[in-house]
Amino acid sequence: MSKEIIIVDDDPMVRMLVSEYLQALGYSAQVFTRGKECLDHLANSAALPNLLILDLQMPEMNGLEVLAQIRGDEKLKNLAVLMLSANVDQCESQTTVRADCYLGKPFQMQEFLAAVESTRRDQ
Image 1: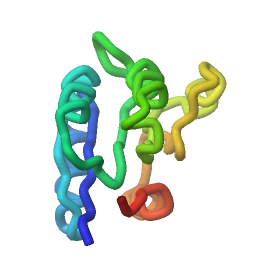
Image 2 (image 1 turned 135 degrees about the vertical axis):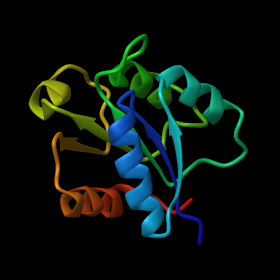
Image 3 (image 1 turned 45 degrees about the vertical axis):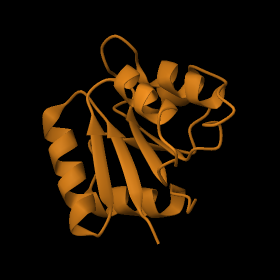
Image 4 (image 1 turned 60 degrees about the vertical axis):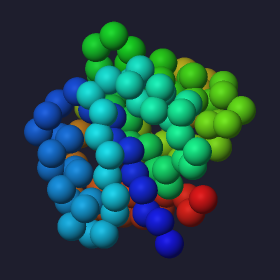
């Protein structure tokens, strides 16, 4: 069974820690620094990942803008999305477009793993 996860975060430390942690647990992790890069990749992919981990605060296109495009796309609308944010309450109240799970930064790795396991979908 495939366990593919995409991580979108402009912070190189978060990308490295999260991707290495997931890979050590047997996941295949692909990382992007910008939302547009991720959207382009998803548009050209034959299969969807089991989970998209998406940071809220990013330059050019923030996580909510990326999420809105995903939810508005027929191919992508059911993609499982875990949103990372330093302010989860603000993140949840800013839009009617919803992620499947929200996790506040900073987080403990066990808390992160629980969020990944409860949110990811087997395609």
